Amino acid sequence: MTILVTGATGSVGRLLVDELVTAGAPVRALTNYPARASLPDGVEVAHGYLGKPATLPAALAGVGTVYLAPLPAYVDDFVRCAQDAGVRRVVVLSGEPAEYEAQRDPSTWHYYRIERAIEAAGFEWTFLRPGQFMNNTLDWAESIKTSGVVRTPYAGAVQTPIDLGDIAAVARVVLLDETYTGQKLMMSGPEGLTAPEQVSHIAAAIGRELKYEELTPQAYLDRLAPLIGLDTAQWLLDGFRLMAEHPMTPEPTVPQLLARPARTYQEWAVVNANHFR
Image 1 (cartoon, one colour):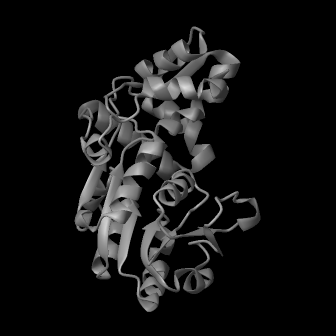
Image 2 (cartoon, helix red, strand yellow):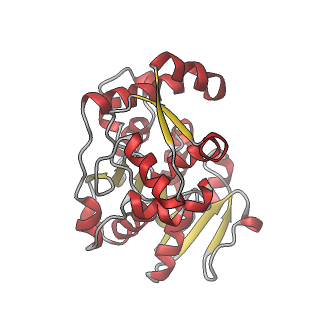
């Protein structure tokens, strides 16, 4: 049966569509902007968005498996529409913090809210739990280009950043192989890195000396809260603190499922160097 990819023009979803097409799988891509999607030939396009539940019944018709992009505010609407459509399997792009969220007040749930709703609804499920995306450090590009400086809190925080292409490739494997049903797959890149170490890889890739400066927690909140809200900024700050107290270590999921090494941050920096020049 057809696989519906939600968020099909998003950072992971668009790469996943290509992965599934290459594998010869029947794909329907859910996008709010079909004219601008530039999707491959042979992909069925469904005009819609998870945040517009009225568009979901048509998109879900005849679908057996769904790749679900994370939009927790609308997960209950998705569940209702997917149940009505007879969807059997849901592969969720969740996140590494889900287990930590589960121990906290339900009002703070983000990824775990999605996981809990999908599991409680009775779907066959697999949860993909990547950590930091390598692409997140593109947020440093403007500061690097204008001042040659990167500023973050908790310089000793160790993350295991993962490439978007590796996430999409794992999602393709899981969507096409039902033996991963019922598993929560932690995902990471191949190495633990601090922000200063990531900055050094970018510097080498662009051939320019860069400087790293550690922000105090309050300075970080003062800079970020006006842009994304205090609650979200505090959530991000808490993540840095936890990774300083409990350094992350690489997970084996990517090489095990793909039979190849995960992309390193150094490799990613070389490919994306022009973003920082």
